[in-house]
Image (cartoon, rainbow, N blue to C red; front, side, top):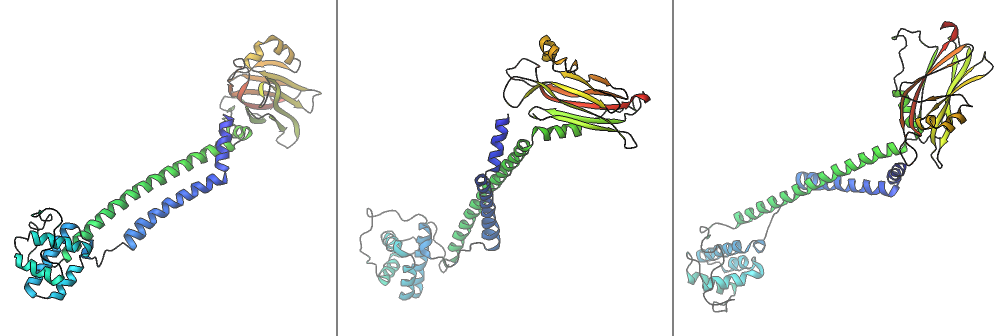
Length: 366
């Protein structure tokens, strides 16, 4: 468990990992801003002045038909050449196809005259076998005479914008998912980092602050002169808590506390199986001590006898109360919360955590 926490901490504190995550988030945010805000909303791409050479093949055939019809009506050879050249390298092949298969509403003579005007020989060889089928949409989609090619360009522009919109929408969706994933990863790592960064002593303080003290007045007893909470968490090898006992006037009366007295096994962190609970009275000549033991330690006769030299042995149980008395003071130590650790050692042999409440009364008021 500690190893996993250390790993999470090293990942979170790694400058390269932080830089990479920040760069990924910046890239995603920048992509969305650039594509949606700048590219689509503020400065959208506008297709203008498109050339007939950029049209689809069937639209090129329609454009060529209109150019031939215009030439048949006006006889303007220069305009015919300019319109034909606008088709680019596909123009000659399209015209040769129309020479072999003239559109239904254009006479073959008009097509031949147009070919002569633009410099294409009427008898030139046609790609493929004679009598090849006309280009798709030539006969069926011929526009009315006099209609210009502008509507065709507008259709192409609309299709391009529709495709662009779909692409941008897809990129936005992907970017949004990436942001959500990055935010989730950052949140998870921050939580792991907080858990990993907190030491056993820090976690113990949190448990102590959330533990509920006994309301002795509500139970019909005199409120204690002093009331303290303390918590041990496995891994806090320096645990040794002490408290000053003072009279309402501020006079020092004594001290009390809890500390580690016995461990089991080897290695670190220590596995604590017994604590000393002690009370010092300035009016007494000695410090009173009792030993709060784990179930395994208490049931092991050799361990219990060895620890008995430090104070009366008591087995820890949830809610268990331990009473210590001196000449002028009485202390009641209550087990508020406890849990045993689990590993290869004997069952219930050492404490994973232990929260004690220490309440002190002056004996003359008891």
